[in-house]
Amino acid sequence: MSRTVIRGGLVITASDEIHADVLIEDGRIVALAATGTPAAESWTAERVIDATGKYVIPGGVDAHTHMELPFGGTFASDTFETGTRAAAWGGTTTIIDFAVQSVGHSLREGLDAWNAKADGKCAIDYAFHMIVSDVNQETLKEMDLLVEEGVTSFKQFMAYPGVFYSDDGQILRAMQRSAENGGLIMMHAENGIAIDVLVEQALARGETDPRYHGEVRKALLEAEATHRAIKLAQVAGAPLYVVHVSAQEAVAELARARDEGLNVFGETCPQYLFLSTDNLAEPDFEGSKYVCSTPLRPREHQAALWRGLRTNDLQVVSTDHCPFCFVGQKELGRGDFSKIPNGLPGVENRMDLLHQAVVDGHISRRRWIEIACATPARMFGLYPKKGTIAPGADADVVIYDPHAEQVMSVETHHMNVDYSAYEGKRVTGRVESVLSRGEPVITEREFTGRAGHGVYTPRSTCQYLL
Image (cartoon, rainbow, N blue to C red):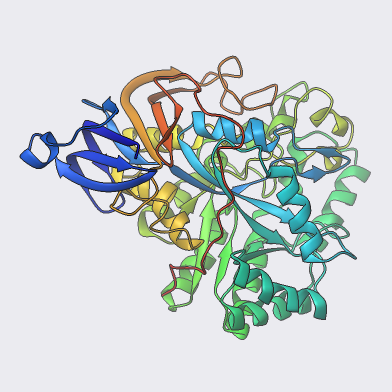
């Protein structure tokens, strides 16, 4: 039996803050005891970690990543090996990535392909959502089977006609099926049909720079699609999770639905909280680094996102980590913004940026853990195995130094991409050590993990329903 004791830290979960020692045996947390009490003092272990003056927090759960995603004739630059290693450096110990169904193929083929990409490669634990690109009778039957197997969430797109797009009828059918089988529909809510018209018109006017990506993907078209998705879910009697919410008008749609008592949930991402259209407008094609969908918004939208996180109209912060290198990948869109691969790197930055939000007074420490660890675990059927520090939970634990200062930079990050979306940003707080199921993955700022330690983790259905 392997034993670890973490002594002297401030244990922070979504519900509690307590100066406590943590006892870990064989990859699980078995006990907590107030520091200095006889119970805590009696514990012995082969590995003792001194967390005095530090936070002891659950490993982060990033419920939205895209490792190796094919997009626009290229692939996301992080593999499951490099991406999960970078996640660990940033204090994230579980990712939920997206397996992709291609049109004309089965869900099973997509899931098998993504399992093959990840198997034996991951430094931390992982699970999959299923992107449903082709709704038909066979697909709907497969959804039932996948839920039984622990793939309990399905992503659909109101954007990207000709690639991932589903029309309202296909969306309704999938929602009706999830209402029966307990699955959760995740929605990319943008009116892709209308956006394509605006893209065509912008290019015809010679508006080709990256900033026009943000101008054609209008906030009103995110709000309209969010509203439509909510109403379709209401008709189907199904819960709905709207991914990467970026616009204040879309937050208002979610808030209205939740005020009506609907099982409607929203996720935002650090890029919408800390970046803006100012970045998209950077000269010399630098703005291409910030092209993602939904797009970055004018800075005034950020206040509504922070307020939504405080009022629980937004429940989760994920990264939508989908990195493309500036050289050779983002550059595919020189002269035509619509050809810039959509996506930003961020899996390594999320926990630190959200701690900075604590420092800045946007959220509390417990809310930090709630939106980054506990709620994503509950939303996607991983709680309390993941997302908390409690007896019986996996020993996914981060020793976090709340006083260390760092400057985010491509020079120091571990993501496999040639730029940082937060280059030069100063933040307070830094991961010091990380355990994944009790095994040291980061040890005092050194990587001590390995590819293949991370295991595939089946999920139960959503544990966050009203």
